[in-house]
Image 1: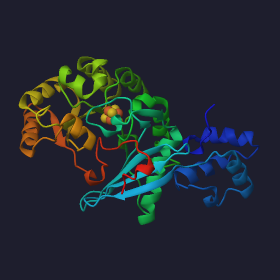
Image 2 (image 1 turned 45 degrees about the horizontal axis):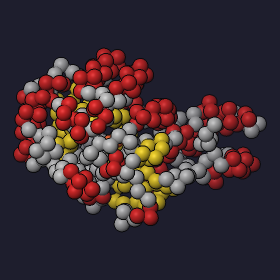
Image 3 (image 1 turned 45 degrees about the vertical axis):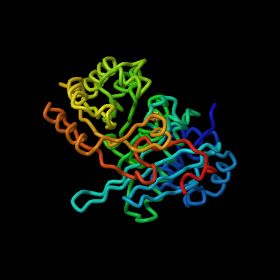
Image 4 (image 1 turned 90 degrees about the vertical axis):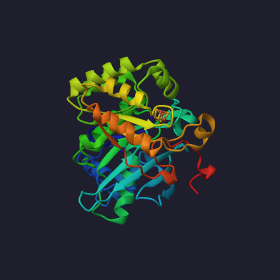
Length: 362
Ligand code: SF4
């Protein structure tokens, strides 16, 4: 049995733990609310939990939230990147992006990591460069959002995390069970109460897991990192395509849309002279034709090692605009994704597993 972690437990599991400790069951709700609603990080904060129970739980070491090792604030926008040290010394990165508008309601999105590193090896992604170490537990996934919530409330007690995207380090669908449980905990009305529709899970295209996820029938947003409309090119950019080529992937997407009634978002990073021609736009429109889908066009972010190793550069503004126009003309809904935190390597594909000692945050 793995280590017990209160942050990853639902009320029923906490109730069972309390029964074993011969403590009253109603405390489970209180503990859950302290952790998930008030984002407590120590028993000492839990004023209605008796000291004796606090001591009992502390001796079992069931509550050891990750520690913030470094914080980096973007100078360009409201993006903040956190380096977190997990209880075994591994580190992960979490990003909070705030969208504050005059006309729109404030939105605070947390981009969470689901694995330490990643085994998928997508060539444009910094995380893939450092390899895979392990899956995060449900508690470690939740802890990232709770940490962001706590930090946000330091600035204003009214503010609340509104959206969660599984687009940080790792392939979420390779950590399926823990990610799924984290989604349910995030959605719990006694906790953060984040709407399912405000939760996005991104995948590089793991076909069997897409079919499995379809069966859950969750109203979450599924995002597919597509980045190329032709197998020969996608094989080079995302090696997983050799196992699950575009035709198989699109069949899985069609099934997902039919089963869930939800639209799929396709992520497409525009890379100069690689995937940004009119021909690519037409091919993309072709494979998405008739599908309930939208395309997020992303300006490629610089990943130092990658740029040196592969020569990948972002597309020019005019080429990106022409690409977008072509998709629209073909009846495909498409937009440019707003760039956030690129100066602190917090943008898409820029997170990586690194030791605190490397001090890359400075
Ligand atoms: S893009 Fe996602 S799946 Fe691909 S290497 Fe990076 S973290 Fe892994």
